[in-house]
Length: 451
Ligand code: S3P
Image (tube, rainbow, N blue to C red):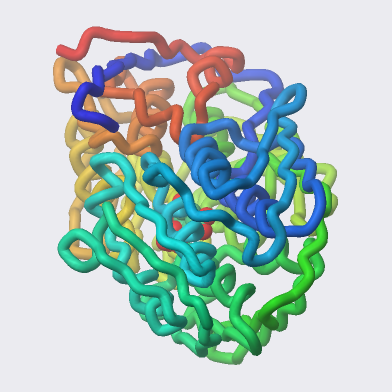
């Protein structure tokens, strides 16, 4: 989001049943990793199904500025000519990571152990998000940082000339921080170890193994996980097929559940167990969701999702589930507003530091559509009443947050009346074809007046 940003309001209207099959774009997390790891591998990596969202394209742009050749073939197939481990070159422009916390934090990991200086920035949302969580461990590995207010973008990083491997226990469950340290560890001699108190998405680990890295994972009885990467491996280019993003599939899934009579199929969706707790939770609420044709693609489990409209009942979502559905609380809150009875969501502290303060943003959206809730510091209870009324004359404030925008457009497909959002521009960061895809299934989403 820039200062010259022009808001793009949209309205969704109660729809006929949604029906048919829709191809959800590639997984955002896996797309970032395919670019970043392909960039430091030896040889040519072909990535098919890459997400062509603004976040991922920002990562590609940063890597190009670091001397990596990335070209686009037909469709969403990209070819990366790897610079080799420690082969990144000093950039002559500022690396602008746009809206992407993942792009920024993972790129900082790579930069931290390259002996070069780079400036990194992002949009109005990203420059307010915490970077101390990666600065602190990466500084221990020998990188130096000069950051705005000590821990924020824009910052200047100078990578370590003689990187030091570390053992680091994550203070917050964060796949971004874990991945940042593991990527930094690739250029350090010896073993770099990350201990995570709760397991978070493991796409970095799976992809590093796919490229031939030596990586060990130990699961402890208390649920913590220890990941060790052996530094200075030879990473060999390997083809990557990016599965459909379960976090994007979540929107069409909930739309089909709440628009009466719907039945949709979403082929080729990633079902990594560290990403799919939304589907577990929705099933507990009574959702008819099945995983057909389960298979493995490039080290990641994949299935076709089949979803049918269902009557939902409120449930209690345990705090331990948060890391594996952290991006899905906005759309779960919408589903919960259509359920009978309260849905209690706990352990949401990390939502306060996402693309927006997502607990506050969800609360604002629920208020606008007439759904009752109780907001705590790190929990949220949605008091389902079956069918919210819609937003009337009060557009949902989206705070330039893609997941808030998409969640409340979905709400309009099942509500008693239309839902207008103040700005859908951020949707392009993760799901550029969202409106076309939803309308292709029978939804009614169109541009609107802001007031
Ligand atoms: C991501 C990890 C999550 C998630 C983000 C993508 C990743 O962030 O919210 O959208 O690709 O590693 P945290 O790891 O900071 O919770």
